[in-house]
Image (cartoon, rainbow, N blue to C red; front, side):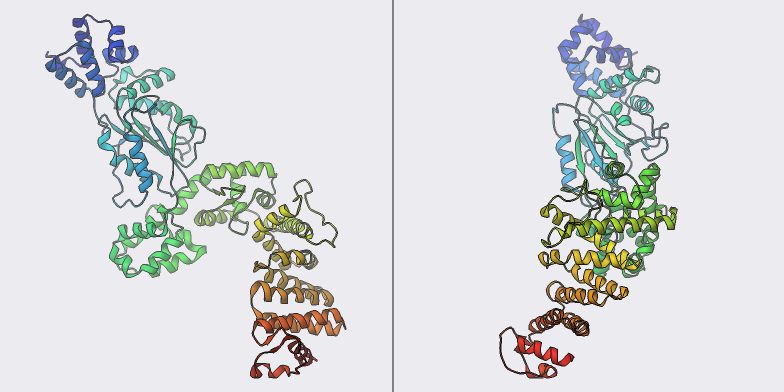
Amino acid sequence: MSAADEGFGSLLRRLRGEAGLSQERLAHDSGVSVRALADLERGRTRGPQRRTVRALARSLGLDAGDTGVLEAAAEAGRPRPQAGASGPTGLLSLPRAVHDFTARGPQTAWLHVLADDPDPPQAPVVVVSGAPGLGKTSFALHGAHTLADRFPDGRLAVDLRGMQERPADPQEVLASVLRALGTAPHAVPADPGERVGAFRALVAERRILLLLDNAADEQQLRPLLPAAGSSLTIVTSRRSLAGLEAVHRIDLPMLRREESVELLARIIGPERVAAESRAAGDLADLCGHLPLAIRIIGQRLAARPHERLAKLARAVAEEEHRLDALRAGDLQVRTAFALSYRQLDAVGRAVLRHAARAPGPDVGPRTVALLADLPRAQVRRRLAELADRGLLQTDPDRERYRFHDLVGLFAAEQLTDDDPVTLARTADATARWLLARAGAAALRFDPAARRGADPDPATEPADRHRARAWLETERETWLWALRRAHETGRHRQVVDTAEAMHRFSGRTRHWPEWVTVFTLSASSARALGDRHDEAVHLHHLARAHNLCGHDHHAALRTARSALDLAREAEDSLRIGRALGYGAGALIRLRRCWPTPTEVPVRWKGLPSEGPVPAFAAAEGFARERR
């Protein structure tokens, strides 16, 4: 048998004996650990990394010929992973990369920086986490393929099945990786701790790239992460894996609009996109710039080369059918979300569903707790967990959460599991709570008013600054509550809440929502048959039209209605205010100017006679309404 046929372990043992060196001495001189050297000689590790072979050869004093023989034996014992699945863990050579991969330039560049570090303090581990559909696996594969030539000792990919009911057993994964890297099956340690040690010792002596796709959690991952050496591990997961120490994290944001359109063009061809550029942009927007959704749209269009983009955009624009439209063969956006939803327990699912009921772009724990009829502390924890799983997005400054548009549609679909009577009851309870808090917060800005009764004194805003912050943050929420109260006939609460907000509205004239607030309150006062309150809230509404909505024609119509009610009640104060709001609208319509004068004017002649003084306009307004 020639030296090259001996096998690396027996050849190394013979050469060490000829050199008269003990294992301890050779380990010291070469920098290879005694344990790793013992594994090499026993054949438990058959194909060490090139730099390890050269270090051993130098310490043994081998000439060029014997060094070449030793390297050949190591190369022979260094098998590459075979294409196709191998065992229950789904161990693969790298699957093919997506040929139309788009964007992610800065993130790919960071992978290259980590891979090119010649002497990292520890084996680099990169965690790529985020929402379903962000393209985490596509990015990891793209990065791995661009780095393949930097890892001559192996490129492995393992599906850890994190979204399945039974994720991959890390000990089974280790056994498969060890065998793929040249460890004889009988030499794979049975003891879990020894198996981890063998894996880390082997990887420390080689330069491999390990892609751990679809990780379930930190517990599954920890045994699979190298400790030392220059091998690179890329992990993808829908969870943030915040418990992992000393890892590099890559955040994949949603694609920008131009990147979404570029991806679509790469799938269906730039000519089709150029021919319907507006429809292409609309499709990207309707998909929320989620890479999976853009890919599905692209593949649908690629399979129908004569279908117009505008036709598909009209179908996707129908919100109630959008998730149905986002499917192509076995690719479905809904399925991607459902995988994550099924992994939640009953409380987690309820929190996600009821968060989708909240109005506005984002929501806080209190509103979700009210809608879900769950304790606030429990909901706070669950919202954080949902964000950790990529199902919600967090606000960088406040404890607020928002949905990606498509995830929000999916979550709202799941409300069909809830009893409609219960949904209506919790919606009403939520609206009552929100209006009570909003009214109490707004009354802080009325020095003549008594303190309002907050529904939760322990958490109520403590001063004007905090009250305004709450009213600002929850603007969409309490406005929804006001609409809900109006729709369900709780008119007295609508009127009282709007009246409490009157003074505060003067401090926030830039809010167009005041037109809606006082439209609802005037309508509720009318429904109650309260002519006085109706006149008061028509005054508020005329002012809002003038100063907030900048709709001066509407202000003029509203002031006329208020003047009729004030005259009916013979209320001189209300008459004067109605005249003032009417004149204010005329001033803004440039039909008069705000200067005192005795010039008489006929109301009906204003449009043809040009601008006139405001006092005369008010007088004409009053005369015309008699």
